[in-house]
Length: 230
Image (tube, rainbow, N blue to C red; front, side, top):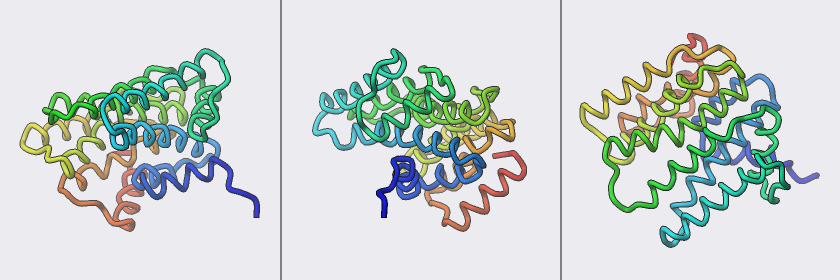
């Protein structure tokens, strides 16, 4: 049996470690575009790992700088280092002429995680907008070059806010209002780009401190996709 291709590896990684966005990606009809979306999510996963596996803040910064250098290589047309995610991301950037800004925002957001001080609401919203919001913008562009990127960013932000409310103690009326506002701002995505944000419909479940079962998540995502509303 031949060894799995990197695209298959990244898809399997997302299925195991990022199941909500992986389920959203199943609504992408084009297998090539779906694989490119997986490259963006794999990039986000690598960035998320940096603060968690580093022994100190300096090591975390070095890991994030390594990924910023990957972007330098891609956007300057230089050979890209031999890393499955770096190679897959580079191919997606070139194929769709993705701008650097949302990918850079994803890196910048992770620096906040190197600070041991708890996030206040403003910090948390900025982190959510840069990390999950940046990823949603990039994937939306892969799916629809005319996608409304502001709406995509807000939807990604909503998904991240829901996770913070469910797992990081972000609570209170201000947090609830922020979630409502982000979900409202993420409405109205085009049909083609909707799989880039469909997972945001699970933010309300996350905010309740629970995770939808596989069946519930599939049903909620199907219903959201059928209506085109989060």
